[in-house]
Length: 361
Ligand SMILES: Cc1cc2nc3c(=O)[nH]c(=O)nc-3n(C[C@H](O)[C@H](O)[C@H](O)COP(=O)(O)OP(=O)(O)OC[C@H]3O[C@@H](n4cnc5c(N)ncnc54)[C@H](O)[C@@H]3O)c2cc1C
Image (cartoon, rainbow, N blue to C red; front, side, top):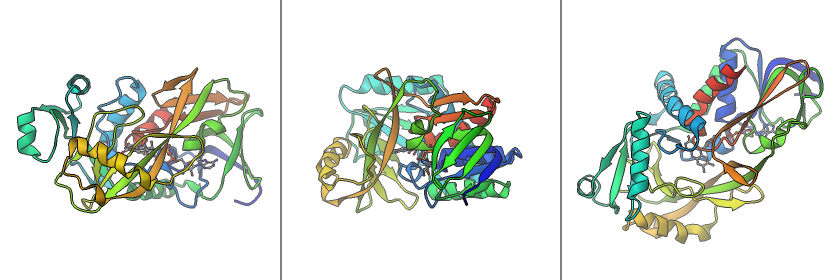
């Protein structure tokens, strides 16, 4: 974009899975939409640095918005993948419990049943027959979990957006969003000012820093890096395998890609500055975590792969576990919605988040 003043109905800042889904939704509703991303390609931050898992909606008892949007998003995403021929596979997953962890597994099962999310508990004997290489005392099968080709998904969402008349500007960084005038204004690094009736701040890791100044909210960010290690051979599992969730994440799990390649992760380590490097010295930690449920894992076959960073939120020192939609207004009535804490399952939920944002306008 050249240095200029631009006017639009809707401005979406951030072209990850969530931002592009929101921009697409507004464009399909015949709104004039500009989508801005600071990177060269949409989806190049967390939306391509995750497990690529379509989550069933098992884990979010303390996060009602995540729970609702994950379950709705899963259905929307499977339908969208079918409609657009986006590669995906509903290969299901096993959540495995070690001795003493059965009560947590049972709670997950009961919550799934209450939300009508398909799930079944397996006894140790059933596990032995179905998955002799697994070591655990109980397991839950989640048949509606799957994997998706995130790159194809992003491409398809962008194609829909542009076909509906949306304008995408990459390599353009928004410095601030200002609500002090009648209409909301976004200021870009190159000096361009974009005025809009509606601004959706979907800048992922930077979203909190772009909340217009003057909005009293008290939220603070902290970042958890999640690294992955790839595995250099086939694994004896045809389904995803997850331990029970732990602080900050879902535990170092096995994910498969659509070609059947295995990788393990993510872990969860606090970082103070953004950094996506995977530390080779974390290999033994990964090996030990994997061996809990797959004792025959050959740790020499693990290699550092990639990492993503979770944008977590705290309020008054306490972790905010849910997605947050923070609204602010300019004096003329135009609106900013900041999408904060868009951690997992944001990929699964992206189409449902878009619906929800549209309903808020
Ligand atoms: C390790 C890990 C594993 C995960 N696994 C899963 C999973 O298996 N399934 C699942 O459903 N979810 C998963 N998630 C969550 C999922 O990846 C995210 O919820 C989702 O990608 C968030 O999308 P987003 O669009 O909000 O953010 P992002 O993809 O981070 O996009 C934000 C965009 O904003 C742009 N941007 C930032 N600042 C500016 C600025 N100032 N101006 C302009 N543009 C800007 C960035 O370039 C970026 O493209 C995982 C997350 C992590 C970290």
